[in-house]
Length: 142
Image (cartoon, rainbow, N blue to C red; front, side, top):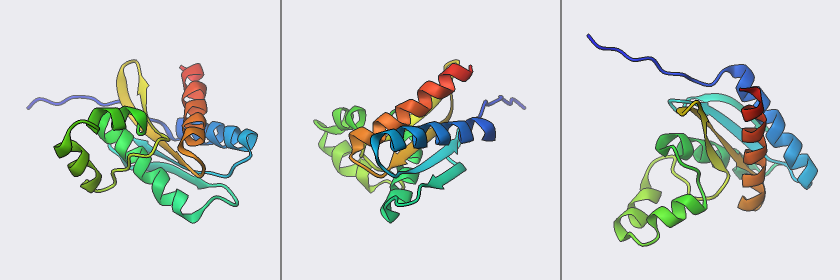
């Protein structure tokens, strides 16, 4: 029987990502919900800042699941990927846990997809900035 090994995000790394995203949100004057999932899309950590919109919780989860499920960020990369394809643009949004809004980013370590982060609570461009702050912080750890 053949097997293979997978790398996944640690709980400590997930906590670091959440802290970095929330620090950026505070800097931007906003409250966010953040979901970090492992390589298989299982929630590793979730946090909703005081004052974050209730719908941000679900949106952050869907952003993380979309990012890890396809290995690409939500937002413009997804929009550009599906915009000229009627089958994809009509079908992708029907997938369970799929969301096009920016703020979801896959997390790679040494080329391996180990998890993803989803941030929601503001305009998608600010959500993306918070997710990027988390990725930058994680990159400094490796």
